Image (tube, rainbow, N blue to C red; front, side):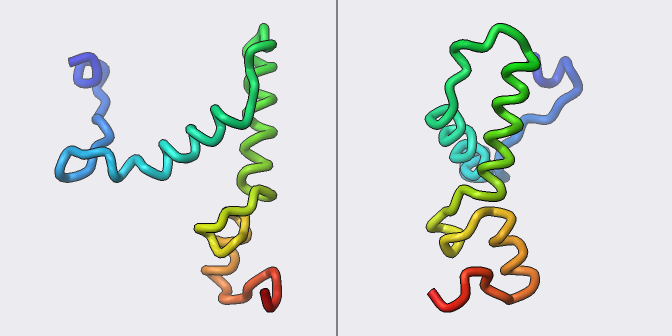
Length: 88
């Protein structure tokens, strides 16, 4: 009811299960495991830590599921066909 009252649409797959949200759930799960916000007193401190971690996650954090590449490297690999790590 709260979602409808705010004019929003709930994020669910066609069959009303959570599989469409799996990538987001994985991302936020890793974020919660890898950063510590307990010492933050202000919004800007939280934002800076999260922004830094997102930059790290997208550009430096290698993932086995993405051919051992960071998300941005994987995107470049998929769009160009050139594997950035050479013959591995």
